[in-house]
Length: 540
Image 1 (cartoon, rainbow, N blue to C red):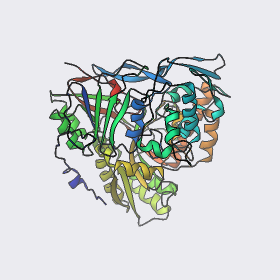
Image 2: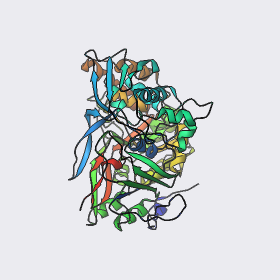
Image 3: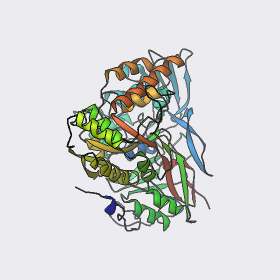
Image 4: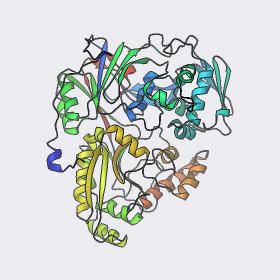
């Protein structure tokens, strides 16, 4: 167990280490600086299957480089020169050269690119697309929960008309069909390769795909050392877009943010993110690097209660904690005052609009917090644990200490236990943690989508395990609601319920802070808020 206090948190630091590339023989291989992108991440690649159950965030996002999807989002110019941000409102073909939507919005037809091949050279066909989407909605992975938000639920919806034509049928129009197909959760697999290598009792090849890839995307895996390093080589036969500029990409896991900052500052790496705010601020004056700060699309930082575990199954306990939190200090320390506060609103029964995330009436009142805790049956408080992903220590470590100090004032003793990335992914997937500090994002800017992902019963990302019957009822209605006024009414009620029952407390909307070498341009802030190597190029 790692115990953190404010005193020893400020002393955490790393020692810069040179970035190396270990070949299959274990020897260090020289790499051309111009031709190789060196990306260092605090996260861990624990799987090569982007929709495998328990795959880390980095593994999920990596899928966009290894596997094509039928379609992708376009980009807009970003907040700084030579940077971009994804455009949710514009979707273009990726593996599909073009697509058509019927007048009644119930039939989607995709025409695949001629000459597209997988990494092993086998032609990509519509039959591979059907197998891949069948797998996504039927298998044990994370695709099922995500794609159902776009009414993609049954293999019977998917048809390979011929080798290059694929079709999807819906029972009701759904505005989230194309966005879901453009997400990380609809990768196209080489079905023949998976079937050749899968275990007899695994029709979808879950185990084999953990350590092997079957893609046809812009990059193929050259070597993979789980939890340490990943080397990608460009797939020069890729047809879905212009070839990415870098023939090779080396991605290394460097958990300590200070070490990553040192590597970037010394020129030993090309791109990183999730640094401590103070370090990012200091690097702004370093002429050897480029800093990019962009509001995270759909991003939010929150304190999450596991509502199925005592004592957080008690609403009054959760409300007591909401009254004890030092919101201004949390925002100042965790976000360095950058971003958008999600506390301090003045409304009472209903929010002014149906947009979300928005500020809720969270405020600090220690005496009222003590009364609520006593009324909940804990006049002397209790002891519990607070966890966060160590990869996200830059925003979670200091606020966690502030939560620890604040709750001590009402008798609650908090033990802080950071978890390595892979362990965090596994324990949150299995819903075993009592109290969590997390930063994540909603892929799509629709309120009903947000609630279906983060607050709907049974969802992978509902780490609070909140199960509210009224929420379930509203979501079933809001999904297909065509009347904007009625949809707004549903959205407001959903937001009110979050405030009333406090399964989680959204604290602030963060900015994405990225540091690159000055020679690197093209960084794009995507809906997943991580690095897509395909976007980056080296300039003189």
